[in-house]
Length: 385
Image 1: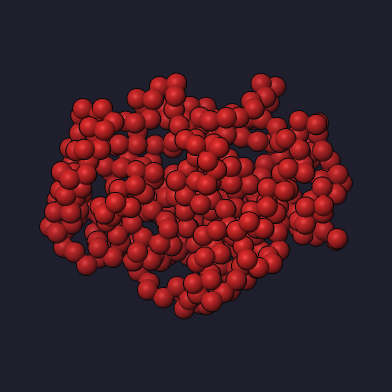
Image 2: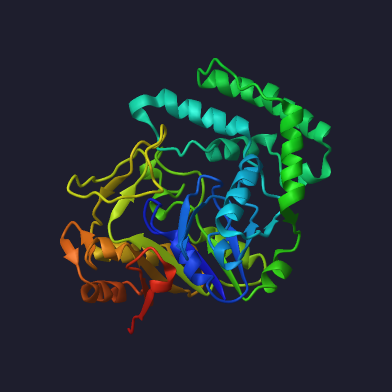
């Protein structure tokens, strides 16, 4: 089975819980296909809690991770995440990756953070993890791919880093009036990148054969539909990647396969962690251990869905607009325990019976209902047309 787990709103909906649920049984591969280490997908299981960034949220269940060509891994941060997960779970991890995936560099993170700091009250809402800058740098000829790191020596990688520093970063810093450059020990950094790749990542040239070696392949998206890079009306408060069904469909089409089920994840209320248009509801506040205040995104905000119909229409609309074939569309509703089992909308609290009616009208075939932090408590409601 091929699944796509997609954030239905501004991110932070509970995608980690959804992936954990879908990987509870069988031999599973989880595909990370957009963004990079900016993801913060939380899974709580058997007394353990972990926030996943580059590893799959199915890792507690032994699911392997695959970095698609459209993912921007940060090898500098990888060792820490793997070590932290091993300490929490006692588990090792298996990471596969496309040789074509371009890495996020410390230069990107530095530039990203400096730009966002300089914006003051005009912040874009960046996570400060360098993904947008990595995408820009890679698109104009300064990419450093996993294949490059694998084939080049540490000395040759350091030379590539020097080119980034001298031929790209210098002018980029000037464009953004950032006077202080990032000083790196390029030889040490190059060695670290190469060692992290050799120690933890297996490069694969054939996605089709890789996918066919697993019972289930689950595409784990980062962020949410309302941050997709095609939402021009929301620019510049968007991400630089496709956050919906587009990448999974294209990747599977390239391997002669089709998606079976698209699972759109939403809380019973809206959140936005970062700057941008949002209807804050000062009456709403919920504890959130993952989305703590930080210098780039400030504090998480809370609001209400415009309506249940709009919530479900956004999911079905993504499939209609970006998938050329029929796919089962499901919505995974989290945090029901925080709102007494209701979806909070501007029209008021919507119970599950009314939600089922709204979902049916928008062609949703299934609801996954979560009223705790644990995937073992998830209930399934299949919707009859």
